Length: 115
Image (cartoon, rainbow, N blue to C red; front, side):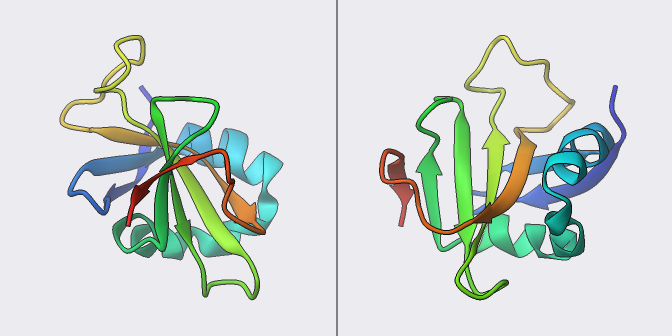
């Protein structure tokens, strides 16, 4: 099992984790600019500007927050295994962070869930 790097509460009160594997094996490899933004993950998940259902993966939710980098949104994608019976569950964890990166805009093909 992956070591948990961070544990957060999302806008809807769900527990979300970031694993060492996702952080070091994916996010920092593909999106190294995110390294200095790790401290903003909690606020992005708990007080996002917008939450959407991912257009490609129906079990994933996208949390957007602006005001961190000028003219950019921090976009954190969370998979909710309670929605996906094929995804292994951590004890008492509702969601796992799949990736995080900077985006120029909201994706228009995503279904807005909040606000």
